[in-house]
Structure formats: structure tokens, C-alpha cells
Image (tube, rainbow, N blue to C red; front, side, top):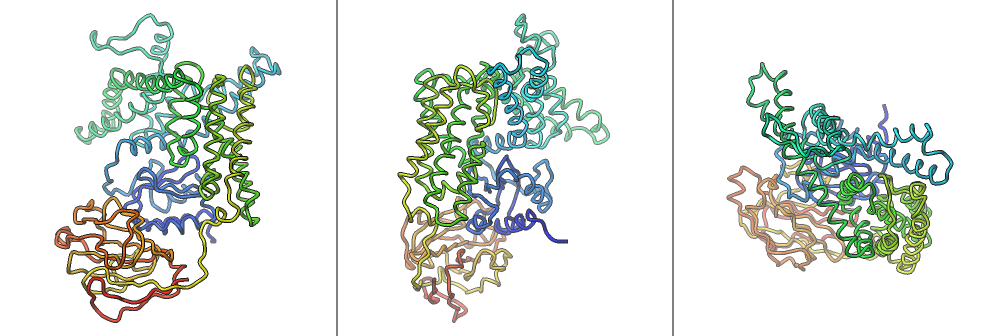
Length: 615
């Protein structure tokens, strides 16, 4: 039975990520596959980007993100099968490295909202149609047609806490139905009616414990935090109860304890935190709507590139819940239109029909609200085009903000969402789109250079030699003999290894330091002829968190074969029962005509092994 396209692509991705054993976890959002990687130095990014179905790849916030586009779910299903993970986003059981708060927050937000965006976007588009029908007087707002359409559109947002709870339960690895039960309790009519009536500020349980009254409909942050607490409560209850009682009493105590904590502490804190975020945005608009437009518009394209754009979603939803409208989403709309315009400007500069096809399809996708193909497939390649998109987004956002353009329901930032703007702000929305598209297009066309920005990599026609030396004193090992399958198989590239008996590590080539990995166990160097050389100190030493290594260089430093770049505590590595072999691998072997062969069994640091002949 022949392999499907998804299966072939996924197998290549896994191999280029360093194999299954190098992947701790995997999940996806609307357009990206997201991975938690053990050892980033094993990633072959150029090979990943060379896969036709891959629109871009980057390491951001301790996530390795691979942009696939709207078909991402079909690829993730294959990945989940290949890696043996389930739809609960479970890892392979390895201990995960601790993440900073920003990284953790972005993991949670992207993980929670990614799966439910289609439902939110679909409902938002229906809301846009309703607004258009009513504004054009095509259908009476009192008609049963509008009532039915409103049920389809408003159901998602009215019961959004249920969707959030189910999605958050997957992220926090707790029972989905208990999570939904807590969300249901927080939206039970007793609570919502009391909040609507405004007669009481709190219920009192057991006569003295206050439960503040809030309307949790449409709120996001309280539910996420409540499910987070549930995940710990459930694990604790399950741990302390005897096995015979767990089936009945684990859900009982978990719901009771986590539910009360949600009502008494987490819910109110989440409500105030959400309001605080919305107040910060409101303050920025109070200072100057134009300044707010410039700031939000300018950061939006970069936010999409880095995956931080999900952080705006809770704020927009909070605005809808608290004030009935939002001014951020129109700016997101302007950003998408500017990205589309800047991308389209690259068409005239493209040489090949394939490039032109990619540019047209990516621009069209951006007009429809999906900007990743344009950003990662085109504008990261033509950097000035990205700058043009940022300028167009900032100025168009400032324009619509100055005239108070707002929207009254969540909707995908697509050209098809225009009906939602029909009414008081429609003309300003249209003018904003024209500013975004035309300005970004003209600035991109002005900035673009005819030939230099069209070539991602200049292919050097002349051959030259690169000197390769021993980076440490010790025993020479052929790369296919090292005790690590990823290196021994040459899937990461070709080179050699040294089993050192001294702690001083020197550069094996002359060039520029490009990367020093946070765990200090690996260093990347690029030579003048474009060779990318990876130095990997020890096998499986990423888990030592950099303790045995002292790095003496930083990215941007120029080194020669006489430059000491690090020291490695051999004894400490051996005490942790790790292999001390140091691998030197050229990761872009397509630039290499031939590698030198060793003439000795051992070398001294700095001793010449031979010449690398490059293309």
C-alpha cells in the first residue's frame, strides 16, 4: 500500500527534527505544527524548509513551529500516530525542561485557542452576514430568519466557556467532562440571572464563605485558570484515595473542591485580570487612538511570525464580553490586508513561474484571513516586503482607529468579513483596506531590489578549500562509529568525532560563531564559503543543563582554527555516565565536494586533518 502525501511529509519532518526520540511533545494550532524538542542542535532546519508542503519553520519560545497551512490537522493526525501520542497532547513521558512564564503562557494560549478557532471563525462569519443583512435592510431584525442565524452565530460565544474548558483540559491533561462541568456550573442560570439582576454581589456557602456573583458568559481567562486548578486537584485526590474509592469519589471530590476554588478565588481573579488587560488597551486608546493604531498595527505582522498573535484573542473576547464591541479586531483586519498587498507586490520581481504561483496563492490566502503562507513563504524571504506590510498595517490601523472603527462580534479578519462593518463605520473600514493594501503594495514595490532579494541563497560558482583541524586532543573517531544513531547515520551531515583527553576545545574551522545553544553543549559556526559546522560536545549532554561546559565565544565572534571556543569538564560528564565524544558535522553537505580522511588514530588540538573542497 503506497504512502499518502501526509505520511511522506511527516516522516521527513520527524527525521529532520532528529528522530522520534528527540521529540518530547507535539500539538498544532490553525496553521502550524508545534513541537517540544529535546536537543535543538539536531534539527536540520534547511531540510525542513526544503519540503514543498512546508511554508516556513522557526524556533520560537522553546517551541519548534512548522507552518503547514490550513491542512495542518491532517498532518498532525499522522504525526500523532507516528509518535504514539494521543489527542490529549501527551508526551512520551520524559521529564520536560522548565519553561519561563512567557513561553508557558504562549503554549497554553496557542494550545487552547488553536483547536476551537474554526468554530469561533465560522460563527463570526455568520455574525458578519447578519450585520450585513440588517444594515442593508434585506431581512428584518425581528424575523425568524435572523433569529435562527443568530442562534447559529451566538451559540459558540454564549457557551464559549464550555469550548475553552474542553480545550484547556487537553492542555492540562485532566478530565474533559469534569472541566466542562465546572464551566457549566459557572454559567448556571442561578449565577447568570443573579449577575443580570444585580440584586446581590455574592452568594454565601455554609453561611459565611462568599461566592462573588459574575457573568462568566464569553469569558476566557477564568475558565482556563479554573481548569488548571482542576488538573492539580484531580491528581491530588486520585493520589490520596485508595484505589477502590477512586471511580466514584475522585470525580466527586475533584468537582467539589476545584469548583469551590473556581467560584471563590479563581473566577473572580480571572474576571479582574481580563478586565485589567482590556483596561490597558482602553487606556492606550484614551491616550491617543492614532497612537494605539500605530502600535497595534505595527506589532501585528511580527506577532503572527512569532506566534504571539494568539495573546490578542483573549483581550478581544474580553472586550466583547465587557463592552459589547472591540477595536482590536479591525486592526488585525488591516494587518492581514497589508500583508496581502505587500506579498502581491513581489509578483513583478519573481523570476520563475513557481515563485509567481506561490506569491499569488499566498496573497489570496492573506485576503481570506490566513497570513502564514504569505509571511513565511514570501515576506520572510523578501525582508523589505515585510517592512512594507508593517508600515501599511500601522498607518491603516491608525486611520481606522482615529475614526473609531469597531466591530460587535468576533469574526475572522478576512475580506469576506466586510459585511460585519456595514453601518456607521463602513466607509472608514473600506478606506482603511485601501490604505493597507495600496500603501503596502507601493512601499514593497519601492523597497524591493530586482535580483538580490529574489535569491534566498547565492550559489557560489568558484570552488575553494576550507582547512579542517582537530578541535581537541584525543582519539579520532569516524562519524559513523559514534554511539549516537542521529550522527552515525549521517542524517545530520558528515564529519568526524574526537574522544578528548583534555578539556580545551578549539574551533575546527575558521568562520563566524552563529549559534551557542542555551544548554552550552553545542555551537554552530559558518565559514566564509558558507559551510555550516555543528560542534556537539558529548552525547545526550543536553540534559546536563550546561554545567560541564564553559563557552568562551558568543554569536557574531570571528574565530580561526587557533581560537579556543570552550572548555569541557570531562570528569563531570563521565560522572553522569555520558559519552564524552565531540562531534564535528557539516550540516549543509550539498556545498561539499569532498571531505578529508584521517591519517592518524589520534590528534592534538589544532592539528590539521585536511582540506574540505567546497562547491
